[in-house]
Length: 88
Image 1: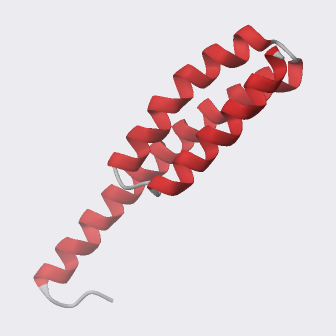
Image 2: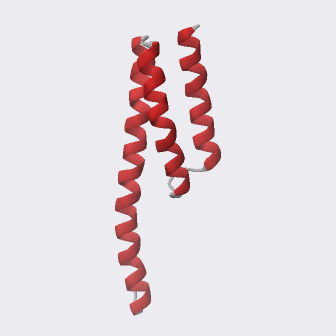
Image 3: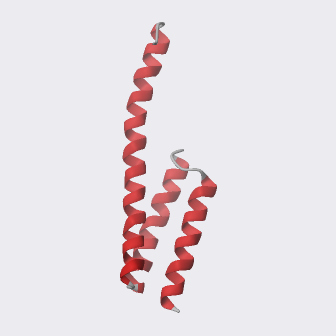
């Protein structure tokens, strides 16, 4: 348990930041799910649009420190290859 005033303050800050990070992570997952659903339905145009919307959202998560850079790049790469396979 936090004892000093500074550690109490840090605990409050962490609590607030955790909520923000949860919201960001949830938003990213929603965008990724939309891409997955478009790929599953076989709609190449919708999948491409969904990927174009999801990519900046993932990279924003990287700049905010919610997702690691390599993780985001890997996810984008794998989704892009799956979307490309739909059009071929």
